[in-house]
Length: 411
Ligand code: CTP
View 1 (cartoon, rainbow, N blue to C red):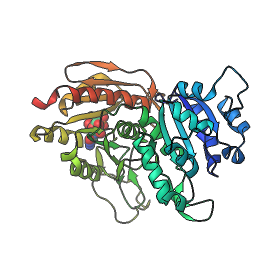
View 2 (tube, rainbow, N blue to C red):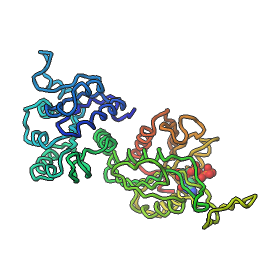
View 3 (cartoon, rainbow, N blue to C red):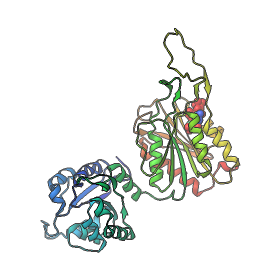
């Protein structure tokens, strides 16, 4: 369950585009996140997808025409408008966008939006030429001026066979926009570097030294920082996770490449979080050819990799611009002692430690149970949380440091 969307009352306004079928699944996704969804269909939308489908998936009655209320006491547009935290119009057709831009209240969805003080998110979806027409452009500009969030459509081939902008974006993208709407913008104007995932240290053209890090914690931090308004540079070792929308992603393989990428952006960063599981060693020699098994025994000589965080901790001392520096420690024993040592040795503001042997907080799972250590403050033991929520709590601590005095700066 997503903690940001949980218990939020969301109206999903669906208007009449072939893309309406995609939003059926969005209702299910929102339900899984713990949101309460009420669906309002325009007359045209009900021709593409039946109200029954949405009712079954949302678990709630679906609203359609303005005057088909069964309860004579109820004025549906006023009741729904007052209850909603957010109204998501998806797909928003050219007709619905025009209606909203000009303040019409001639169907239930338009009337609800006119009567509501909820946050409004619009996902336009239509034929490219309709989308690019000056009338639609102007209408969308008007909606943006009202303070509505416009989620730009994707480009690609459309149901009508044409190619261009106008496709409804994927749910992941829209979900991030919804989370951002509900998130404090307390990292606005800040640049944050997050390193994530493992490093792969090549041994020959097919083999490498690696580790079991999935990158999930680092990617969650990057996504949450972006939702909270930061400019995010995600420096990622090899992972199978799609990068969060709106984040600049730099892909690296080895610790040396990761070091170079982090140092390249060092001077721009206000915050650096090193969530990556960097390999401490690499094969001293990389074989150009595949190593054959003909040798009965193979001794591997390893060379030490640079300790990127240690270097950052030293480098920050000579920097005029303040920096919040955060490390991670994945420990299997003496967690707090090891973590405290790393916090001090690497000159960090915060160190986040977890137990990699615990089933619910190790590698490749969606949950984590961490303790946050900081200089001169009590340690914070977080309960078992999703990695996304853990990321939110770590960022809360960072925001606290940005507001106050950076403890380590004077060392
Ligand atoms: N780290 C790094 N460069 C390295 C090794 C680690 O930047 N070559 C960073 C990690 O990204 C993490 C922190 O240092 O934020 C701690 O990493 P960890 O592997 O737990 O500790 P090490 O410093 O490698 O110490 P040890 O091997 O003694 O546990």
